[in-house]
Length: 65
Image (cartoon, rainbow, N blue to C red; front, side, top):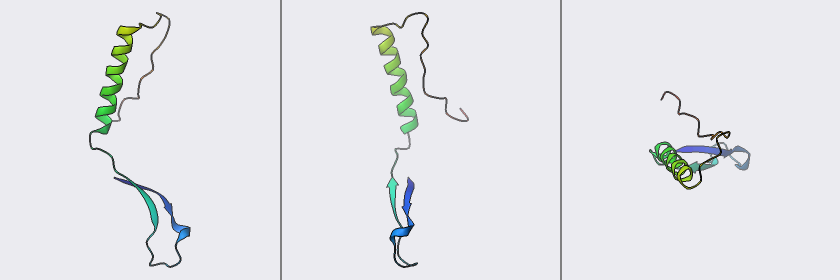
């Protein structure tokens, strides 16, 4: 879970809550998106191989792994 977009100027008292946005992320979302990207790249390579002089760009490798 991440909190962002804090709107501190929208409150009228120091004891009032600060409005913000809460995003909930699936714990395996990083793994899932990399697997989907790899599967899609393999599917595309089978359906329409790129010319030999092209370069496929992928997601950056996760830090520490």
